[in-house]
Amino acid sequence: MIYEKEALSIGSFEREPEYVISIFSLSKSYSMTGWQAGYTVAPKDIINKISKIIEHTITSYPPFIQDASSFAIQNCENFIKKIRLEMKTNRDFALKRIKEIDALTANEIEGTFYAFPKLNIKKDSLTISERLLEKYKIATLPGISFGSSGEGRIRTSFSRKIDDLEVGFDLLEKFLKKITNLRMLTTPR
Image (cartoon, rainbow, N blue to C red; front, side):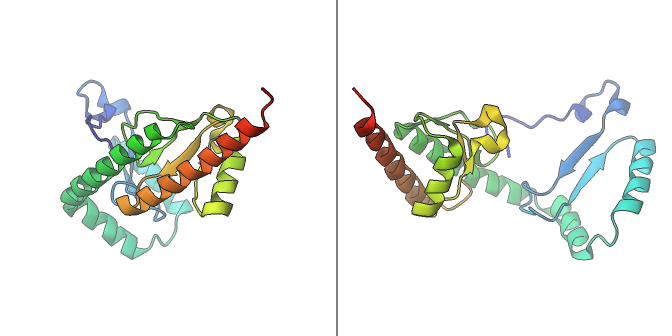
């Protein structure tokens, strides 16, 4: 899910492709999250070795997922284009709203359907995420879930309808304003 740029696979280069193994997932691009479907492009001898491993580790891969995967790869390029356009619109909306909220700093989002803004307040990301869920039923992922360098950020998805995003960002802004005002009131001058 890349918006302005083109995805580039090193396997598409002419030079020494026998050293490249490309692994693709259908989860996000074809909205098949959780189905664990994907494919690999590699030299035949490597594919044969991968097949031997898979034979003994994965049994009874559901036929409906096989059929859906095959159909998606062969027929759904227009679906991907449509989803990418919708997500780009949502991304632009999310970035605009994040930039309007003083307690957040936006990062540019080149791909995916998540925002990972920095919190400009002195509260840990876990506390913020827990309180947002408790008070407003807004699910975010605390940045600390991604390791110590993620602390001070929250991850939020913008894969919903714009109306839902608007409500969510309004509540997020209301919550962060409350926290900021409380902090100002309790901070010694």
